[in-house]
Image 1 (cartoon, rainbow, N blue to C red):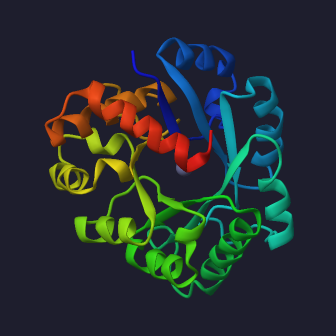
Image 2: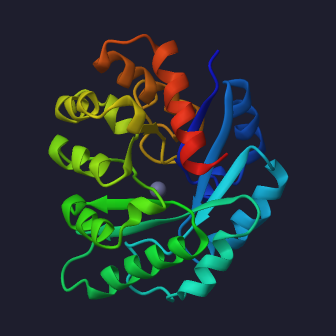
Image 3: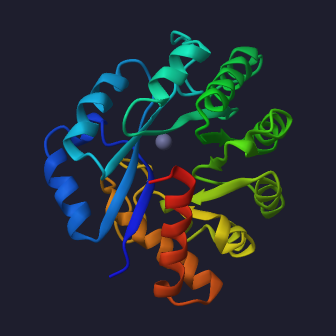
Length: 256
Ligand SMILES: [Zn+2]
C-alpha cells in the first residue's frame, strides 16, 4: 500500500468532536502518513494548537482567517508569521478570494489576501489558496506578489484547464478534492488530465465534499484516495504509479 497524504482537511471541525481520535486511527490504518488540517479563524486556532502536539509528525497545520468571513478580526503580518512559524505549522492559509459567497466591493478581501501573502513570504512557507469563482483574479495577485517563490496551492480547484496551467506556470500546485469524482464533473476531470502529475495534490476538505462512493456522508481524510484513483483513471495510469508521485509532491510542497 502506497502511503498518501490529505493536503487539506478540517479536523478541528465540530463534526469530528465525538470521534476525532478514532478518525486518526482510521487514517493511519488506511495507509496515510500525514494530513494538513486547517484552522479558518481565531476560534479554530486554539483547537488546532491543542490537536497538533497529540499527533506530532502525522498532523500538520495551517491558519489564516478565511476569505468568506467579512466581519472577523484582521491579524497583521507579524502575528500570522509568528503563528505560521510554530512547530507543526507548514503553511499560511486558507486564504484568497471568494466571489461566490461574497460580493463586491471586496477591497477588504483583497487586502487580507495580500497580508497573508506577505506573512508567508516573511516565514518562507507556502500558501493554501481558496479561490471560488475568482481563480483568475486570485492568480493575478499571486503573480504580482511573486507567491511562486514560497509556493502556493489552489485548493479544491474548480477552474478551467487554461487557468490550471497558468497556475503551474506561476509556480503553483493544483489540488483536487472529492468533487473530482462526482458523476457530472467530466469537465473538471479533463482539467485534471491536462495538469502535469508533478503539479497535482489530493485533498478531502473533510468534513465536507465526500467523494464517490461516500458522497453525502461526513467526509474523512482517508477518502482522498478516491481522488487519486480518479486522477489515475483520467491519466490512464495505474494508481501505484500515480499515488507515489502525488505523495512526493505533497511532501516536497509542505516539507513534511
Ligand atoms: Zn477548506
